[in-house]
Amino acid sequence: MNLYNDEIFSLAPSRSMEFIAKAKLMQKSDPSVISLAGGEPDFATPSPICEEAVKWLRAGYTHYTICPGLPELRVGIAEKLKRDNNCNYDPDGIIVAPGGKFAIYLAIRSLVNKGDEVMYLEPGWVSYPAIIQASGATPVPVRLSQVDSFKLTREKLESAVTPNTKILIVNYPNNPTGKCLSQGELDDLVAFLEAHPQVLLMSDEIYERIVFTGSSNLSPASIPQIASRVITINGFSKATAMTGWRCGYLATTPEIAKVIYRLYQHTISCVSGFIQKAAVVALGCTEEIEQMRKRFEARRDLFINGMNSIPGVSAEMPEGAFYAWVKFDWNSMNSEEVCNLILEKARVVGVPGIAYGTDEPYVRFSFAESDEILAETVRRIKEVSPVK
Ligand code: GLU
Image (cartoon, rainbow, N blue to C red; front, side, top):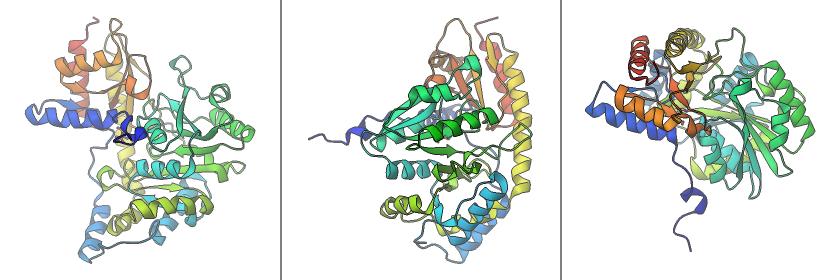
C-alpha cells in the first residue's frame, strides 16, 4: 500500500507560492531584494471594508454561518454579475468560498470522475493542472502561441477535445499573458461549446475589474445559448486588494451548486461571517476599485515601456490583470536561467515562464508595486543584461 495518495504526492509545488516564499525569505536578510513574483496588489484593503469586518467582529459575529454564503452576499454577487457582466445567475447558484482558488477546486472536484479530461489554456496559471490532477482527472493543455499573440481559436480547441472532455477552463483577463477575451474568440468559444454539448466551461474572471482596453471584460455566461453550462469564478482578492482575507465565489446553476455544497459541507463548513459581511461592502466599493485600476494602468505603461528599452527584452502591453509577460532573448538562456541571473545579479524575483507551461524564455513579473520599485527593477535588469 502506498504511504500517500498518488495524485497528491505527484503534484508539482505551486511555483508562484514557492517564489513568493523565496522572495520573502531573501528580503529578511537583504531588504533591497525586489519581489515581483506574487500576484497581489500592494494597496491596503479599502477602509470601509475593514471597518465593516471590525464592526461584526466586535459584535461577536464569529460563529459558523452554516450556508454556502450569507444570503445578502449571494444576492449581492448575483446583482453584481448582472450589472457588471450581464450574466443572469440565481443567488441559489452562488457559492462563497475561501478564495477563488478553492472555488475552482470545489467545482472541479465535484464534477469530474476518473478518466475525465479537463482542458485549460497554456501558458496558464500554475494551479489549474494541479487542481485537475488532485481531483483525479487528466489535465489537457490547449497550447496558445506567441506567434499569433496567444489567440484562442476554434481550431486549437478542437485539437485538444476528446469524447472524455468534461470541462474547459478559460481565464480572461489572462494570468500570465494579460490578454482579454476578444469578441472573435468568444464567438469561437460559443461555437466550440455548441459542437460539444458534454463540455462545461469554467470561466475564471478573477481579474475582470482590472482591464485597460476601455471596454468591459466579456463574460461567456452572458451568452444565453451557453449560459447554463458556464461556471463563473471570481472573488475579492485582486479587485479590492483582499488577497489575505480569502474570499471568492463561483456561480453556476442551483442544481450544480447543490452537488458542490455536499463537498463544501464536509470540508470548509463555511466562510467566516465577518469576512462575508465585509465582502458585501466590497461589492459597493466601485470608486476605490476604479482608483486602483487607474494606478495599475499607469504602472503598466511605466513598466512595459521600461522593459522594452532593455536590449534583448520585449513585452506586449497587457490588456488586463497586473502581469507583465516578458520575453528575454538573452543568448539562448531559458526562463529559469534568466530568473537565476536577475535574482543573483539584480536581486529581482520574477517567475520563470516554464512554470506556466511554456518553453520560450518568458518571465512573469507582477506590476502591482509602486512606481519607484518598478523603475528600480527596470534600471537593475538593464544593468545586468548580457545583451548590449
Ligand atoms: N494568483 C496569484 C499569482 O498567480 C497568487 C498566487 C497563486 O495563487 O498562485 O501569483
